[in-house]
Length: 409
Ligand code: PMP
Image 1 (tube, helix red, strand yellow):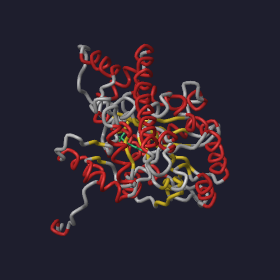
Image 2 (cartoon, helix red, strand yellow):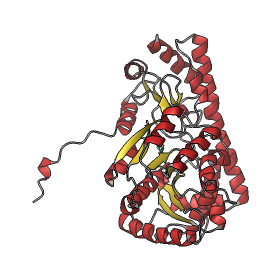
Image 3 (tube, protein in one colour):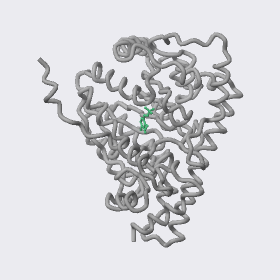
Image 4 (tube, protein in one colour):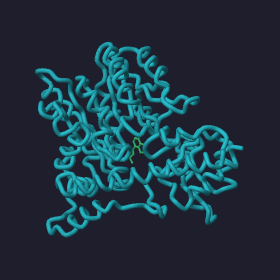
């Protein structure tokens, strides 16, 4: 029999625990810098205007129904999604050597990829270890651990410079056994906000090619980081150009603001070669089997919204505008926070706030300082000192800067 009494209590998820503490705080000054979701200048969730339009279109469609999607998801969504990340002129698309499956947002895509690798990444001489950046999105550890793949890390963040630990990273990739699985964030690295430069990406790709490593891109912020969809996809496109066989987990949570709708995709691209199309087709067939047993078929509504936008040139152009508005507001908050801290003469250097990109900034605040910010100033952030830039706005940025100044001194 199953002794359920022996099941131990699990700790609460740290991030969701933080959100709960924030909600329970009754202070009128409270600031949420923990949440990984975009907020407008009034600290409110923002439904992208283009998403509102797509929603209207769908709701007014007399043929709208709630039928099941196919196992691989909504084709007009997955086909445009892969064009979005690889570029519509990608040789991998022209040569039909890709496979795409709609997933439960980015988390589901990482999971499906992990499950697929756990099942099939067994070639002779292949190292099944997944190398994650240190630090990384905390869920990576659980997702890859859950499917039984061994996990290792490579250096990513340099505490001294608060930038990329480039030399350590490249050395670790060199030292890893051949054909290791390397997880990469193509843009807006979570939690650090630190990305390699184009030149650094080229060096990373060169070592990975030499060591025959397998790239696993986790792309949760395309277009949201720089405001430019192509620029944020440059790393992935470079690896494809270099002929890598690779996979991509793609989330539309942030760039479409479709968080709870769970819209995402998992993509596979084969290396060029005479059987590349066959490889992609076989991979697609196995992904379908895995998907069927996991979720049967993915959720429909968010995918329909994204597909409506991605397949309509006018709406697509409007989406780009919306992306620029979100990334622009975040960049302006970076500038404002840095300027206020420098104005106050807060000890330390603060250029990393504007050097970092995307949703998050790794402030360098210690766990003790984070605790004081929460207890004395009602400012909530994860204990590693990561702040969500989207939680800042024109009304609270000065309050936050002053509080940081007090706890740093
Ligand atoms: N990967 C990374 C690096 C992320 O930051 C996130 C969002 N926090 C995800 C994946 C997945 O998010 P979602 O499942 O909401 O798309």
